Length: 458
Image 1 (cartoon, one colour):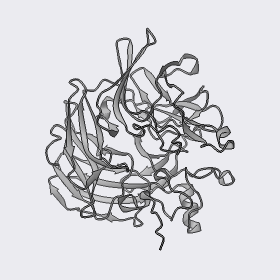
Image 2: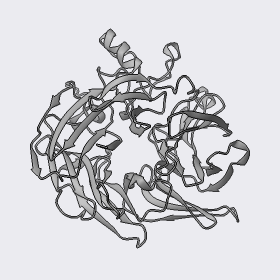
Image 3: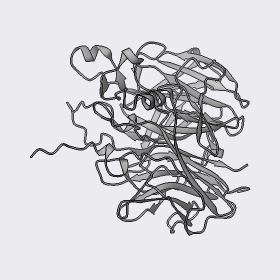
Image 4: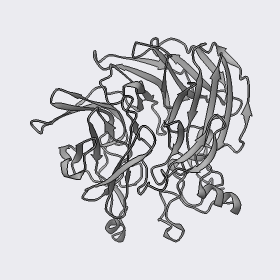
């Protein structure tokens, strides 16, 4: 008898769910704070049909899971992001697109825009994001898909899953990257009123996977890291996508309203960064804090030079001196963690606190707790979810009227693998080692996913 190996990303709590439901008045253990009012929404992959070919976790159709909170009462709903690809496959009653680990299907326009990665709220509109295409406008609190959002046809590039909204100017800064043909990088700014002001090309030597970036008050920071896309490799029978250890990492810093003519590039040893925590300016330096891995095999299977630290992200800080042109890179913690977040009222400004998710000792991306970093003292505290319980990215919800940076709550979905139940966990950010202030019991399983956001009621 032969046993067929199950793809771990289609099994247990990575497996998709099929039902879209709405449930009012969820059971709450503990108490939801009376001044916590708004909606927590998280995006993630949830294939509508059994996948064809080898399935990668990044491939699934986007599904939004939302918990609306008001006066201590919580409501849950989940909805697919209804992209063009989702609709086509819904009509066909089966999967049509393969995923990132399979050859590109040029005959049907390449990879599917799944809308499955992240969310942003800007100019009174929530957008579901996937860096392979345009954003999708989402209606709140219903979570219905309104449709592709192209800024009145002005969007000429793809759109990162991690745009940055400046809390002071209200501008949203984003980029789009291309593997196949120059410009490999295009850079855009949207006004506070939601108008796409301009898009400029930025020169890169080769197509790279650029998942995130950072902004400061005056600058934008791009990461040209050596996870490269090279069609010539495929002709030699090598992976088209590969981490090149002998290429340096390059960080490009340009004025926010600048272009390719005034970007400055800084080099440091080869590494990969999926997510930045934040960046800020300090005297002559631009400071970047992010989760750094020495290399990654996430989209390639090139193990010709095994790296014991591959795919293990740790919090690092880089200092780029704009006067001297020097770079200093230092590890802030040797504990593996990912999905960094801050109080987003301070994006691009120096923060005292940062929050990441502590990785469990497991080959799968499972997170066993929240780490709160005090970046001034270098100390950290951990909120542990408990034995057999795993969470996702912890989003910071500021308390209305708060003056202290950490006055608010951290919230995330947690799966209890012991009982196969899901809950929204709400933690007091000023007392992270304590028990959650509230655990909202979700009426169906919430599969592990990617990024979330908190939209306050006002």
